[in-house]
Length: 150
Image 1 (cartoon, rainbow, N blue to C red):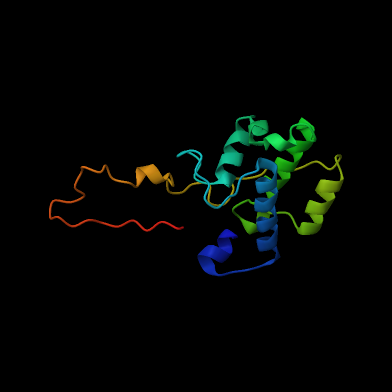
Image 2 (cartoon, one colour):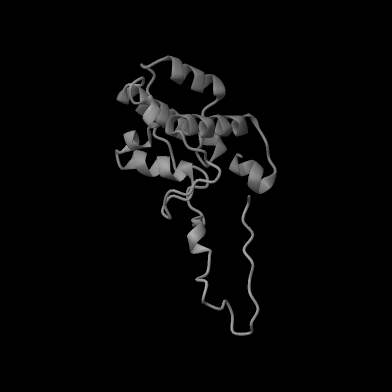
């Protein structure tokens, strides 16, 4: 879900571009953005892809099933396009027609993407929310429930 829609209820054609970028990164990585729990430093697939791309390790994002069918430079270009689509500021995202041109042509130069939306957030690893079984959560005997999605 595009950040402008999630935070303010605003929807535009750039929201669709954001969704396409998420889908592209999910396909490239073989992982879902929802329920992404790989590392406490990357709370989402978008943050993880951004981190790897910035460190020059974007190939580590590749779904193992793509290794034999996708060239490294082609894969990195697709990651780059995906990151352009999920930029936090909707104004900076390309139009869908631009995305199609980028995907069809290897000669079109791509701009540098900015930080993706939701790349800084809460830590979502389940074990960090679960108390030790022998530890009381509060001095007054009450406990606090943490609701997690199914």
